[in-house]
Image 1: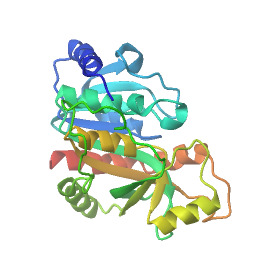
Image 2: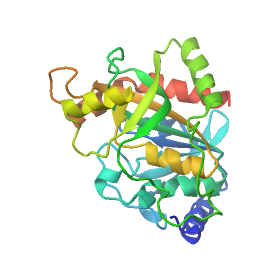
Image 3: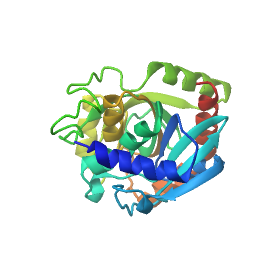
Image 4: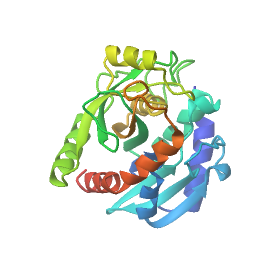
Length: 272
């Protein structure tokens, strides 16, 4: 469980760099970090300067915190996230969410690039996460609970906030963006899923599968944040099409979807 003193030390370092107090947090997934370039009057802090932040080398991630104005709101964006498959503990993966909460963040946008399981979806589509399935067999809240951070047994009946989802759906309609809706399954990685595993995951009720997001969402709910989850579907999951998967393809397709992704997030922020 996260150490409150560590959270406050990280928060204090960030506060020493900027007078901005963000109310919206954004975690940017693979290939989606350019949204941070839209932030006005940015203060950029490398993760390496923030006490107790992990050090990540994930491909396609810049590894810095950007704080500033986006569509008239003060935001803090993570360009790069920590993944369980890199060998980080779930405490390390989710620590930035605790720090965002300590900074005053109330709403958290979690984004990712992932594989589509639902065969009615297409690569390049965006998917609004309605719910998730944890397939990894562990949970970021395992261990002694700190009641100052959240309750021992949090309710996860609505992880992905319905009001925020409704705003995003309306924005997508107006912008003529195809916004799928579905259940996201968390797979540990780093190996992609086998065709048999994808058949299993589809049977369990998931529409997409990826290697992030669920730990951060659980910790956000534990801390009382409202969560909006958006996936960029970069490929059809293994076995659906008879072709191999590559991370280069993930980054490439995420780049193609970037403009509609950025427009969707920005206009959703305006209406919050």
